[in-house]
Each structure stands twice: as structure tokens, then as C-alpha cells.
Image (cartoon, rainbow, N blue to C red; front, side):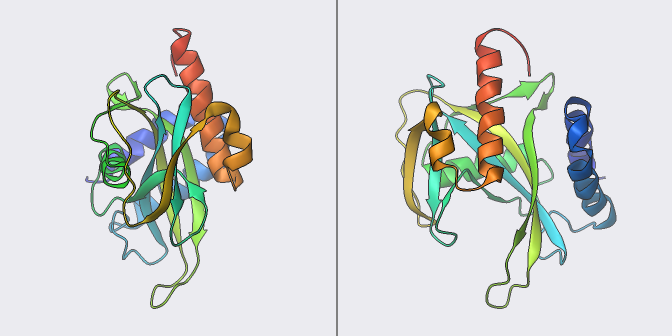
Length: 193
């Protein structure tokens, strides 16, 4: 089943975040009941993937000032049929940052989902209102790369970790940032995710 990697990631996430069972259940329901959940044409919503990108020294994070949504967000987007959301998150990170080399945080033999989020995308033009069911990963940029924005972004900027509260415009971004920064601190102290 092409959706099995998604369900395994949800199982791993729920084992670490029992308090987020409701979000996991919403995502599991979409994935199990909509064979086309990996495509943006899936009517109620679809799977997306995003990346919290940390600097090589792990002291800063990269956000994009999204052109259409006019706010600071992590990099990411539609999985477009890709059954492994970590691969989609890496693709989006490369496309939207101009950087190529990243280390993705993993737990054992699977990528580590740092956060899950379900959010409503308002209707726009011919596109009806729908939900994004977002798998979120932590990527650490390799040294010696320069971030370059693409056409989807008004600006691309590195922020210090202590600037998170000031720049995160909504709780979803702030929550992801807090989890990613805490994970980096645990990894830095030798503890696992």
C-alpha cells in the first residue's frame, strides 16, 4: 500500500506524543479513507510536508516570507504523489532555499517527524477551501551553502533561535519551532529524539 509509510510515521509519532492523539487520528482518517490523499486534487484535503531548517551551528533557523500568505513560515509544500513525506520535505527545502545538502533527523531507520499539523487553506479562485495535513521534519543545513529565495517567497531569512517568539506569526509555526529547537538541544547533549 503506497500510504503505508505515512501510517508508520503516524504510529511512531503517536508513541512519542500521546497528547496529540486527536491530530494523529484526523490525519490517519484522511490517509486511510482517501487513496488520493497524496494529490492536491483530493477534495477534503491532502498530505503536505515541510522542513524546519537549522543552520550548521544549530543556532539559527530559516524561514520564508511566503508571497501568497504574506507571513513567515517554514519551507514546504505539496507532496505531489510522493509516498514518503520526508523526501517531499527535502525536495521542497531544496527548491525553496536554493541549498542542496541537508541532514534529516531520524529515529532508527525512519525519518523523525518533529510535528504534525492540520490547517485549513481558504478558498482561492477555482480552488475550494481544503485542509493540509502536514508532516514536519527537522533538517540541518550542511555548511558552505547560501540560501537563495525563489519566486514563492518575498524574503528568505535566518533567525536566531531566541527570536522564535517574535517572528512566528501563528501558534503552528511557533510550536514547530519550539519542538525543533528542543530536539536540537537534546541532540547536542547526546540524548535522542
